Length: 188
Figure: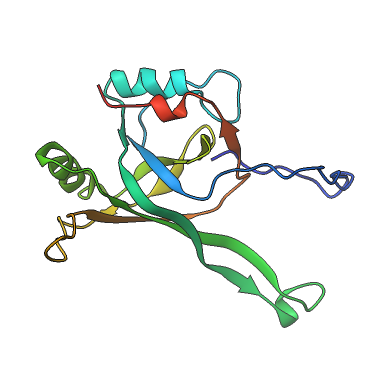
């Protein structure tokens, strides 16, 4: 993830209140993974384009998981300092931990084997996409240790699914990039 850079001599940002807020989406609908240390070319932007993702997917550097539901990001906690550990005596937060959780609802044997293999990696790079075609993860993705369940079958009339969660620490800027073609990303 890109590092957030500032200095004590910088002026404070003067954000204008937008007339209408940006709709970043409410649900995570797809997730992309890449081996940590693999190369991924991003040309001059804070977030890769759909074409850059598709090039990496086609060349087997990256994989994308579609057909997910119940996807969301929640805060897990943070390192907090307070009292004598801070200049003001107030609370300061560092290293905020987040988790994205989702269920893979469209599964077959290939999806099952892929998640079983991904689950064996101790670190991967991850990007996630919302239902409004926004991508999070910046140019390098979030460093995660993926966790996938085996196929869960809850009973008669309930479709099977694979549960997944990924924990990561927010370091730097939380860029959200828009591309109308993110919803066309698919494994080849």
